[in-house]
Image (cartoon, rainbow, N blue to C red; front, top):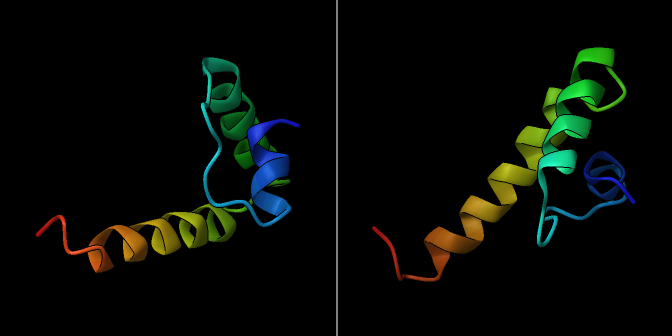
Length: 57
């Protein structure tokens, strides 16, 4: 599954990720099938986990 599909399915992190995932997400953002709101939600949840870990900041 491409990165955008993973995000719409509830995955906040696509591993290992690839250039084609980046291109796919960019294309889907431009077409509106992946919303900026969905992408920002994934980023927000990941940043919360990182910050709560106490290893950064």
